[in-house]
Image 1 (cartoon, rainbow, N blue to C red):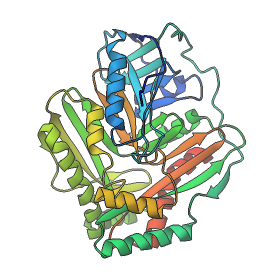
Image 2: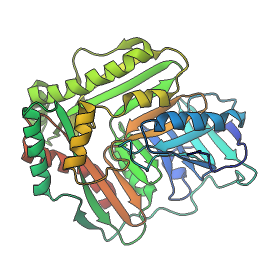
Image 3: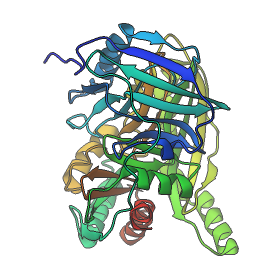
Amino acid sequence: MKLAVTAPDRLAVRTVPVPDPGDLIARLPHPTALAWIRHGEGIVGWGEATRIPLPPGDDRFAAAARLLGDLFATADIDDPVALPGTGPVAFGAFGFAPASPDSALIVPRHILGRRDGRAWHTTIATPHTPSGGPLTPHHPPAPPTELHWNDGALSPDDWKNAVATAVTRIRQGHLGKVVLARDLHARARDPIDARVLLHRLAHRFPGCYTFSCDGMVGATPELLIRRAGGDIESLVLAGTTPRATDPAEDAARAARLTGSAKDREEHRYAADMVRDALAPLCSTLHVPAEPELLRLPNLLHLASPIRGTLTGDRSVLDVVAALHPTPAVCGTPTGTAMALIRELEGMDRGRYAGPVGWVDARGDGEWGIALRCAQLEGAHARLFAGCGIVADSDPAAELAEADTKFGAMRHALHT
């Protein structure tokens, strides 16, 4: 199948420095929001200069890099700021499974960004899509109302049975770990405005990567990969427990998590895979010997920050291709875990647990894993949560963990 981007003409790209724009999310003029924000910094976009649909298959990341490279190579780019995220940028969300038809890249008409005390505004146009447009909202965001909730593909009891089946398969030696996900449905009276959810998520989880792309909205704690020049970073998360409001109990939970053989085993699978995937791409690679503790407002995670230097001229999408899917969202061995997910989850994950983020014309970019998220379609939101299952997993405890993970998007929709 021959693939082509939707814009028939070369892009005209202009980046200019601007005064500090303040709250980036507040500058989004309408509900069709593109965003990647952490601690108030990052980029937001709106409008659509170009959309690149991507074919299903194992080569979808290579196809994305090739098509985007062809598009940006012919663009007329004026970028005196020259930072990661300036010039032309594509926001992207990929389906979790290779067969998923849900992957797409979007090059917005406007990008507003801030990084390390510098801010910029990029306009992208073709002869048929002029770049003019507002920098202040002309559709004020309205919170969702009259929410109604429904179970997803599996009821809580059915999902616990799926976890029990997975534990049996693991104990029989078929695999070491599998990640099983649940979905949950919410319907509001009116179409849900992504900007409202972005504001609430960014405020409650400032240390997470708050994202929005093509209706997929969330706040992921997991950085799949960041590329800035030849330097890369990744943050591996696996092993989770809820926070407690009492400081003593919270400290006790943290101690139990760091000392848990079950959670450390789950984490080791994920960290080892990321190390093995990145090592052939890097001249240097640092992987900590022991995980550290990541504290979020609602959860504690075992975390391993990984840093390295790439060999050769590799785009961030090349590294995404090498990493996805990690054991943190799939399991190990990958093929066996994928097959068990298809057998037991009873649903298509779509973009849940797939890579989400952005890439610029230099190949720099930041990509996370689409967790703590929901897919928005009009007044409907489909929420997702998943848990890593190993031999010592308890179905009731895993259900409670999944319910805790739903809490981020429930909070974003409710308050």
